[in-house]
Image (cartoon, rainbow, N blue to C red; front, side, top):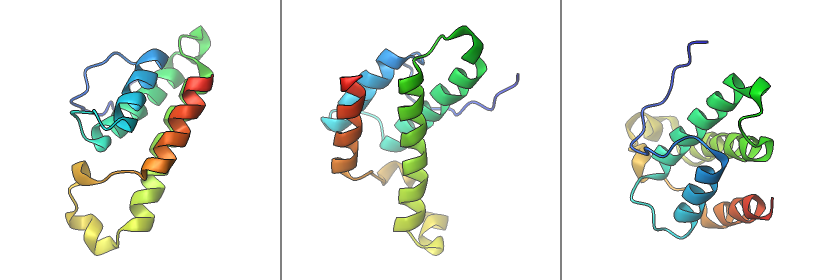
Length: 111
């Protein structure tokens, strides 16, 4: 299959463990990358999971969490900003609500 991978500044390999590490970094606000870069990385992880699904290379729980993160991002952006704002917004400045991120990281760390 030919996937349209997102270009991202995050060079961590796509894995369940790296999802956990990156999400923990974002929740601690220690990330040196934007949340938008993290969202694109999560999208790449979900595409890799779908591509490798038969080989069970990725943890299904991590896949679900990565998919949820990217969906919540889309919903948050669309429900927070007007169409006019979205046409000019710098997505690297947008941040998901901290309480939501904290719930997700707790869910991932409990798995």
